Length: 459
Image (cartoon, rainbow, N blue to C red; front, side):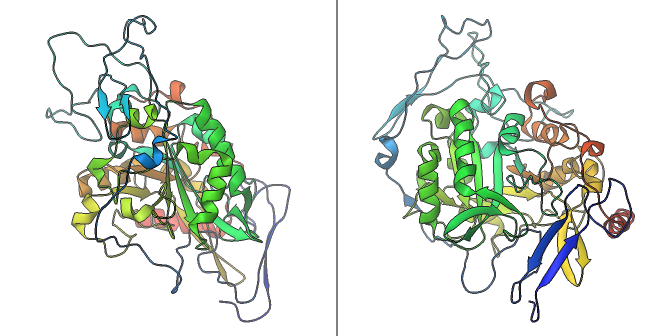
C-alpha cells in the first residue's frame, strides 16, 4: 500500500529484441499512475479480492430448480443430422427423445471414437459406445468443432480457455492475447475469461485497474459474443466473469439481458450440480441454452439463476503462476476436500508470468520469451506435460486449459486439448490465426529474460 505521493510507471518503447532498461515494443509510451492508498500487490496479475467484503460460497444442500422457469425461452429444434453417405436431407439420423415436466426434445446422435493406448485401455475424455448388429449412421455435424463431442457431457470435454480474453491492447503491459474475441471463438477457444471493474457506474473489462488496461465496456464484449453465438448454432461457449470489485450480480444480469446473451444462458437443473449431472452438448444445442456463465465472486443463483457461482462447480489450480513447474494442486476455493474436488470440474491455470520490480513496484507480465515452450505439447513447463501431470494426479483431464496468447505455438494448445479428448486434431479445419513467437510484436527487458534463464536452469 502506498502511503505517500502517487507513483507513475513509465514504460518506454523499444524495438523487438533490444536489451535496454525498457519493457515493451511499439510506438507509444505506456503510462499508468498508481494513486496513494491504492493496492499494487500483483499489479498486472489476476487478483483475488481480500478482506471482509467477499467469501466463498458454501452450499450445505442441493437445490432443485424448476424447468418451467426457462421453458418459455427454450427454442426446440427439429434437427436432421448429416450421415456418413452425405444424404442429410433425405435420411434422418436416429434420435432419442427426452421428456420432462415442461419440455421434450430430440438429441443429436452420432458415433464416438476413442483412441486406445498400447495396453488396450483408453484415457482422457471419452464417451462409451454401444455395439449394434445393424449399421448406424454417423453424425458429421461438429459440436464445438468435433462430431464426437455431440453426445458427450459438457463436463466430459477439455476446452482451451483464453486467459483475459478481452485484453488485446497492443504494446500494453497488461495484454494477454493478440487476437480479439471473435477471432478467438473462430479459432476454437470455447471458454472466455476476463476481469471486470466498475467505473462511474459502468462495468468495464479492465486488467487490475482501468488505468492499466481498459478493453471497453462489459456490455460491448457481451454483445460481440452474442453475435458470434447466434451465427454458430452448434457451439457451446463458456464465459468466466472475474468480478474484481464484488459488484452486485444484478448489474451483470442487466448487461447480459441487453446484449442478448442471457437468452442463450444455461440454467442448471440443481445447485450445485455434480460433475456427472451436466447435460450433453447436443441437449444444450437443441434447447439453445448453450452459453454457460460462471462468476468467481458474488454470484447469487436465487437472484440470477443463469450466473453460476464458479467455485460451486469448478475448482482451480494456482493462478497467476510464476513457477514453470505449474503445480497441479487445488487452490481455489480454499479448503476443498479431495472428495468434493472429484465431484467438480477443474480449471488448469497455465499462463506463465514474470515479476518485475519497477520503481519499487511489483508488476506481473506475461513471460513472452517462453510462450513457445509454455504453450507447447511436450517439454518442461509445457501445456502438454502439465496437463498429463494433472490427469495422472486427479485421474481425469482438466476441463479448461487457461492460456495466454493461445495462437503462439502453431496450434499446440488445441493439439493438447484434442489429445486429452481422444479426438484427432485438424489444424486446417479448426484454427485460422496461428503464429509463432517471432511473429508476436512484444519484447521483454533484460531483467525478465534473466529471470527466465534462472527459472529454466532450475528445472
